Image: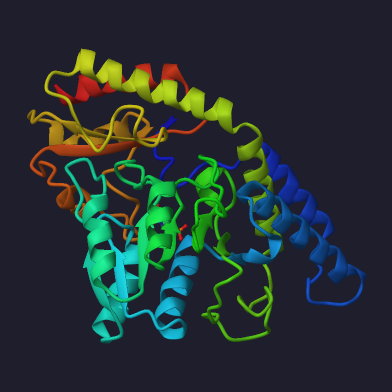
Length: 373
Ligand SMILES: Cc1ncc(COP(=O)(O)O)c(C=O)c1O
């Protein structure tokens, strides 16, 4: 079996499994309890917070554990509008639905106006248009993703952070696809809010975090026992938090080598596809400019092209027709539509991790040749 759907989720790293098993066996205490069982659990959580903060160059007091990236994104967008008086949001048509649907809800309630930044055919943001929108509006919340989950296009983070600072805008960067894959210095990049989901970099599902710049105060989404310094009520997912921190630590420890390795895999896949399949095209950036983990391939129209994803699955190769969506169905991609991709062609997202190999790519190319042509 070959797994090329790592943008949807990744297998757990063995070191993460081991760290979580130890906690499952030995630490069941509620971190809010004042006795020794609780105190032990509390120490594990605070150690995890320090590991995350260290790797993001932020203070541990700026990290809040959540159940996933979606929760963190909702918390920020609701908080910016309801608590910080934001009445204008700038985003793009290729954001994840966690961003787009949260904004749509508030706009529908008449609480904010929304502007969409222009993008080009590869999903790159038009920074002149962006700055223009910022200058014409009152204080805005900017919600732009660091790397697109379908086509891998990367935002020039530092430049966008600088522009936001110049216009006194708040900056939420959806870093779900890049946390644990690229180095992010949230302080120097002038991000106010960044989000993370552990299962995207070999950590467990059901846990993520919000980086909330210490100068910004928003209210929690959930009301309850006041955990996470009152920002995220609910008994902490201690196994998940330990797993997240271990995955983050491993990812940062080996990041340069992993990036190089995965970059080479992607370049090899691109080269082989170009050599072996006539009329191959790519959505987004297929070269070194795009995120190393994501390659979105647009296949020529052959009589079997429409069945390609299904036939790859039958041959034991897992890829994706777009982003993983909750119903499991493949619906038309809002991202491909927004960049003006040819929707009459079959597009498949292949996404890689450190566990993939060149041999898997060779096998995939053979299968594609067999079932496409
Ligand atoms: C760019 C991006 N943002 C947000 C999310 C939401 O993450 P989660 O489903 O883990 O909450 C995803 C997940 O695919 C994503 O790729």
